[in-house]
Length: 182
Image (cartoon, rainbow, N blue to C red; front, side, top):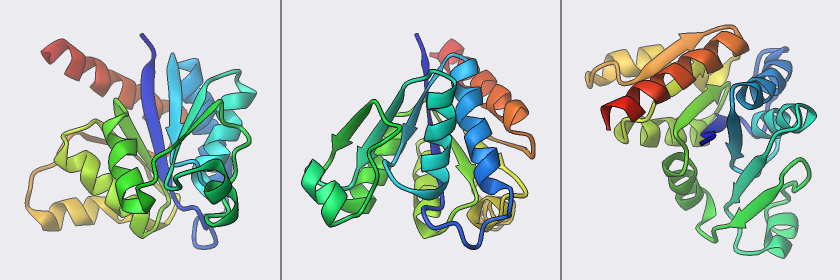
């Protein structure tokens, strides 16, 4: 069975490191290369670029939209649908979508990010999901180590790396470890 790995990251990327979009694209490719399906929040920025990478590699991309319909997804939220094979319209706005996104994934990869990314990270952390943090991409991703340290809740199932390929390998290894414990 394929791994379902979500990419969480900034939809607006002005604060991200200059190579964050290229790294997101490479993460999307690596997820496909390592027998994965990419799951995104059906949004722009980092998740969108990871979807481009996954599709360039011939992979499958599933998006979970905060909107209740295609019309709302495009008009009210102004979100893309290209580079996705399936878009599920949750109708739960961003907070509800974030919960479904992380819960429907075997693992989560964080690249750059803002408040929504932090929300997805904390959901995944509380749910004890394998989480990969792509360091040196800016935003939330570069704050996670300090947040986890100051939260005094343990280290979770988090792996860190600056290299997209190595990070996806580490996340897949964590997912396999979790499956073997079940």
